[in-house]
Length: 232
Image (cartoon, rainbow, N blue to C red; front, side):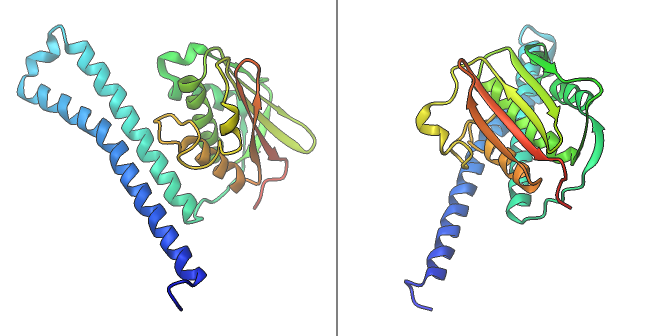
């Protein structure tokens, strides 16, 4: 196999992509990890700070950055599973409104009132709960970070498809980015890495579905379409 063979070129391309990804991952992990370490060190050396005027601020910063760190680690784990094609789709029947409401509370935290869940309480879906959670979490977080309230989450079941919609009232996506919105390191994400939307789309594809972007005028609308008969 010569130096110009397609196989060698593809291998080099994968190695370059992996090197770039690892560099970016290390960069993104360093920022929240440094803040968490700094606050922990401060409290270890001066525990009285916790009871002082700066105490609530330190606690809030520690909570925010630790959440960011966990989200980023989850994204990296998702990517490793998706790249290894080790995601298993195991559909189960569940109440959509209950699951959406619980996930919004977890993901949005104190911004949960900005999310309007318009899902019929009797609606049920036969989907993989973990894939559903990963997709919805990334879309809701993306809307809260890059859009504007109110954020609406809706869902409906037809004869052939289950549809999930997440939309906001922000400025929408710049036209030149729409065609590349779900590529890694391009689309908006909750931590600025451009991974959230690509991960959501990958989980949708693993489930036999897809995510479509629409201009909500004003705002952005992401419509997730699942087949009524999920892949085995």
